[in-house]
Amino acid sequence: MAGLIAGRLAGLLLTLFLVSVAVFAAMEVLPGDTASARLGTQATPEALASLRAELGLDRPAPERYLRWIGGVLTGDLGTSFTYGVPVAKLVADRLAVTLPLAGLALALAILVALPLGTLAAARADRAPDAAAALFAQGALALPNFWIGLLLILVFATTLRWMPSGGFPGWEAGIGAGLQALVMPAVALALPQAGVLTRVTRSAVLDMANEDFVRLARAKGLSRRRAILRHALPNALPPILTVLGFQFTFLVAGAVLVENVFNLPGLGSLARQALVQRDVVVIQDVVLIFAALTILVNFAVDLSYLLLDPRLRARR
Amino acid sequence: MSRRLLIGGSIVGALAGAGLLSLAWTPGRVSGFRVADRLKAPLEAGLLGTDQLGRDVLSLLMAGAANSLGIACAAVAAGLVAGAAVGLLAAARGGILDAALMRVMDVVFAVPPILSAMMLAAFLGGGPETATIAIAVFTVPVFARVARAGAMRVLKRDFVLAARGAGKSSARIAAEHVAPNVAGDLLVQATLQLGLAILTEAGLSFLGLGLAPPAPSWGRMLADSQTFFLQAPWLALAPGLAIALAVLGFNLLGDGLRDRFDPRRSP
Image 1 (tube, helix red, strand yellow):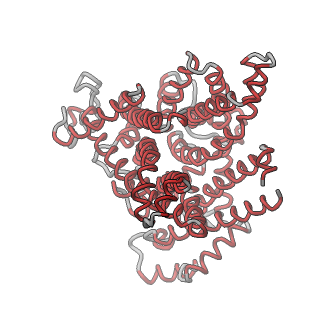
Image 2 (cartoon, chains in turn green, orange; image 1 turned 180 degrees about the vertical axis):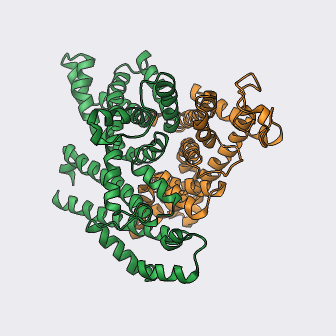
Image 3 (cartoon, chains in turn orange, green; image 1 turned 45 degrees about the vertical axis):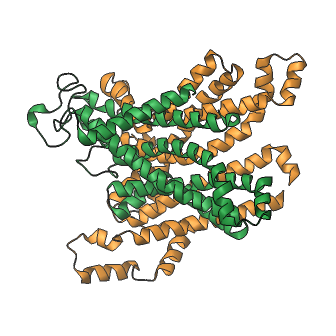
């Protein structure tokens, strides 16, 4: 077991290294660098050259990569030239919006999908199943940024129940902060709930056909209790795997939804940095997003190993 | 034919038809600017009203369908070819090459589609090529995994061993035995990826990273509608519905095809 985990850990480190190289290389081929972006198109070649020397941009690429990744590993993400503050602080501020948003969306998606998917499996091929399938197909097809627009149209501009966007900051109180995140989280959660409902249904249904559930039924347990007590708990590992897999889409969705609601999160930071060619910030944000995705999947992988006794014993 | 296949196929067919028709004819204007026609409500001018430049919304949706479907199809086709090649190669060679290729695929897949697309878009500038490449890159790992898994399954079967024993070359075995057995899986996945590609393309143009204006695009119509929320809320409805309908169509078609090819694995 320890060897297995060590192997996975080595794979994780290798993937993280490759991602950092890929991000660095992609930014290398981007036309323009920090110096040309900062000085604008009117800059003289001499001014550009001296700024490049000052920022160390004239050094060879491997050296710059090592300096960047060394800084990232020690918590120094460099300095943003558009904001004039350390990127680490910028990212920490933005994560304080994006992580609660993603967490809230995930919680909402699970709250809807687990009961609905289980119900659909318990009443397979009857009305509740059809209703759940309809919900899932519909939710899957809706672009999250459009859901966001519709929510603003209905609850902010028409009914005036909710703020149409922006973020008061956590200093304004947890209630005010959460209120600003509710509609974005719903927009982000709905498509996720669609995916999860389908996954839950098929995972629970798979388990419901297993011998141990039949045995429970033969012992006189009602179908409902057999599903809730035996099928559902055993269906959780595969559901968890898909949840980890979906994290990529949650992150991508956050970029769009944050832009719809004008939330100062990591996603809108990425977009602003891209528009302003703030290379250091883009590099760091993309690396952080990718690392988050990889780490979440790694954690899911590990918990899968820990949850499933058969996998533990076999290897 | 299953109901899902029929409904999905009809939706996709209708949208493709509308897109193709828009290349030759549209009911209203899709370019230019006329103050007198600005922001007309649905039925007041045309079936779905007009936008902030006085262009006919229905016509814009049709032209948008052509752009959106065109980009999605090109991207998924490119991703399919590249991904299938990677996956088949990995399965056929195995060993270190297999491990290395699939690790690279993991890396590509770890960067969320919108972010890799944003990086690429900044590198290549806006335009249909950018969106196409960005989406294609993200679909490569998906097809690589499907192709590899399918090929691994087939390569263990007796008829492949028999073909190998009969002295057939690896290339012939891949073409005659592996390809037909993986094609179904790939087709199903391609259909589902088309839905995802349309969503990503819409997201990219919503962020201003897709087709450059004034080319009609569903995503940018939604982005533009934000400015005219109070005066013209209908502008925020039609393009979103079009995107949702297209994605729904491809998802239903994909599910229907999966039922057809592999009834056991249908959800």
